[in-house]
Length: 73
Image 1 (cartoon, one colour):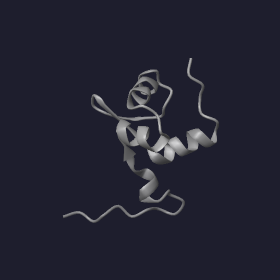
Image 2: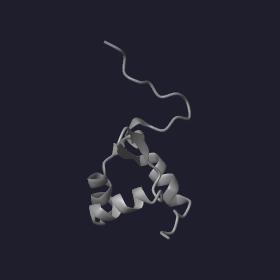
Image 3: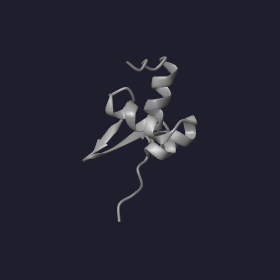
């Protein structure tokens, strides 16, 4: 059995590296899940691709929001 990942100095805590589903993100941002899918398809939200699935990294979304995000075209 492998040891759990240990954070390097300066690395964000594991809780912020968490991957969120569209449902998680929709609930967190109080928007419809369909809106999250739409923004993901348009490339507006920063996502991690896992084959045909995409997940949102909590730390990347927080950085994106702090940077002002991107307006939807």
